Length: 309
Image (cartoon, rainbow, N blue to C red; front, side, top):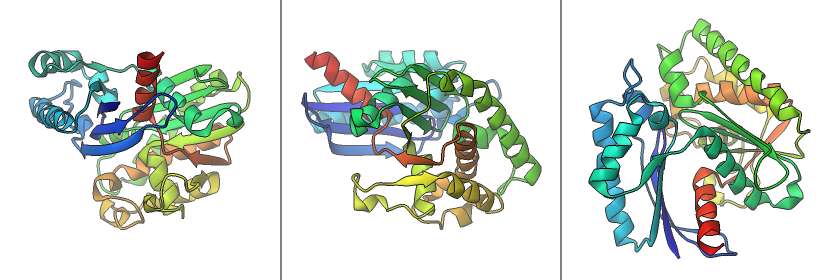
């Protein structure tokens, strides 16, 4: 069965087409994405601008045409933090639903954490024991922990890299006082959640997903993506602390010269390193293994379960 997932993220909007069957892993067939940076299109009242909505509508048009061309039988569409938290986010999605005949809905932060956890569980399997899964997106940070396919606890915090960069930094590179303020803010927000996660027990396997952790692991020496998804990649606490310090004085142009860091992601990397450093320190993690599956794969797996169950 050919499935499509349209992921309206806070930074990147992505259509992923996969061939998926019950009992088999989803095989990517086609990918189309654009860095719309919807977080940057939120005004002072946290409303998505007309320009931001127009960019999104244009991408949806492209995605629907591609899905038709690629023979997609079932298309699942969802929006995450930037649209979910926008004051007019539901109005924007309602207009797109009416005009484009696509059922795109805002996904809650809790569901985002749970579906990402499902993808990680399916990738690593039951032998991983209790999983702790961390995902830094453009608009939010998700943390989930559990022993089964449904986590015992799922948390979403407004600590995404695009949101923090937009709201907390005024220069490139940011002045030291802004970096310190961000570090204090991030650690205070995460520290409030540590007890809720820790009371279920220590993780047997700590895992990170999404691009921020992949970029940090790559600049710390992990294998490039060209070597395939089965190559083990991990990020140590020592490396993330080291790179959080190294990235601070670098302008974005210099960060873009680091291994695996694109120009579009370079501006966001410092905020991501600060969040990653805080997570690993406060949860006392010495290493995070990078999982190639994340939210989109979780959505696909859940959809398959519903169709074939």
